[in-house]
Length: 86
Image 1 (cartoon, rainbow, N blue to C red):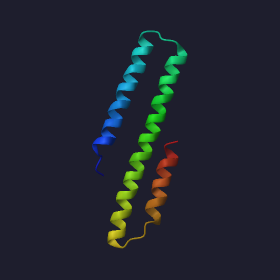
Image 2 (image 1 turned 90 degrees about the vertical axis):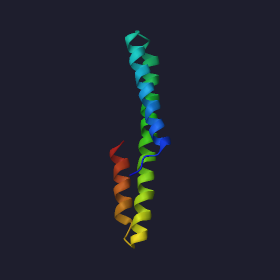
Image 3 (image 1 turned 90 degrees about the horizontal axis):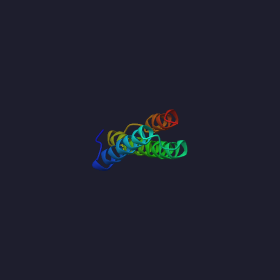
Image 4 (image 1 turned 120 degrees about the vertical axis):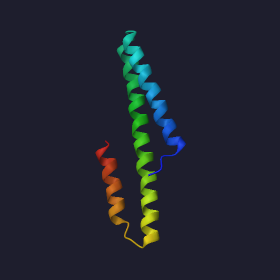
């Protein structure tokens, strides 16, 4: 799969966000602030997972369609990936 610049940038932002959470912990910030940032990071990770799975699904369905293959199994696999990520 080809991961585009937008996907990579999302992960880089996540990396920075997690570094910020670690810095907050090291500075002894309030628990609520840390949890808020961790929750935001989790949401960003979940959105990133969705984007990667959907991009992969599109790529796989197009390839299967070009080859005349069935796409049902590919779609089931993508749904399973999303379910496992939860």
